[in-house]
Amino acid sequence: MPAPSFARLVLAAAATTAALAAGPTLAQQLPTAHSLGDLRYQCGGIGTDESTAMRAAMKDYPLSLLFARADGAYEANIEVHISSSQGGSKQAQSFVASGPVCLLQLPPGSYRVDVQGAGQSHSRTVKVGGAPQSLDFRF
Image 1 (cartoon, rainbow, N blue to C red):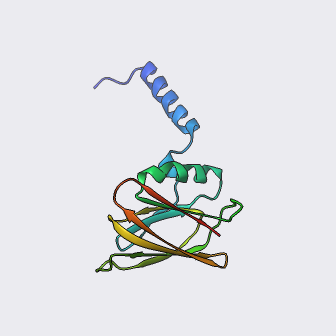
Image 2 (cartoon, helix red, strand yellow):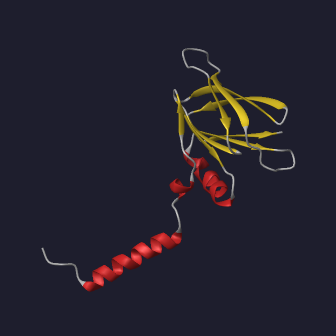
Image 3 (tube, one colour):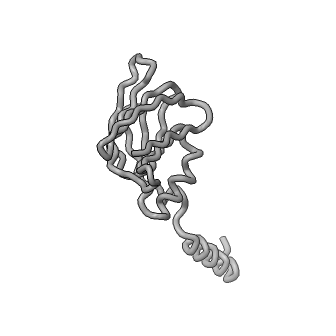
């Protein structure tokens, strides 16, 4: 096999440099995913880069949760409880949202989302399985 030409090596080096200069990909900017039964979730959005990445990724997740104060400032450390509003064998899942945006992967169905934070509690129901849904909670 012949050795690569100098021109090919220079082009490969230039492409690598351009990719590094462009910064991390969207997936690399998202926080670590966690799993609870059928639920897979990622919460974050603290800092401009991560917040931008989380909001851009919302279209790829069946359900997104947003947490903010009434004045629009983001909230974190929100207790989240998700249960099937259809009953059945689906187990309820709970976690603490470590950031103001949570991206959720969960099976199609109807769910009740209960959240608690900043001294307030809110509940919403949502049907997951068609177009991506977003629930905005204000505290």
